[in-house]
Image (cartoon, rainbow, N blue to C red; front, side, top):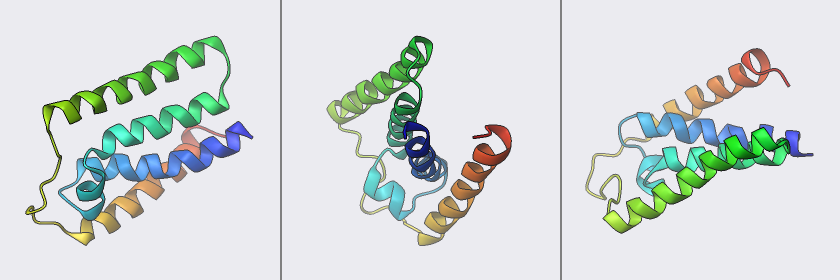
Length: 113
């Protein structure tokens, strides 16, 4: 069941990853730091799918990094995109389309199930 859950979890992770690299959209404004959330979701999904020691060390390290970095970002007071920033829902649509495309490419061609 872990593999199937991982496939589902990587989809929002890819969308968040793409959203983090585009100009401000609603996703970026609401989630503040979408790349950190994407890494957390991606690492958690892979931890659920892989139980070997090397996988636990690798993906556990990514998860620990993302959690630690998020704590540091909150302490620093970095709120990501400000509420007065120009927000475009077009960037959210682009994030969805490109994120789904990357996810499909990874799931079916580059990282076969």
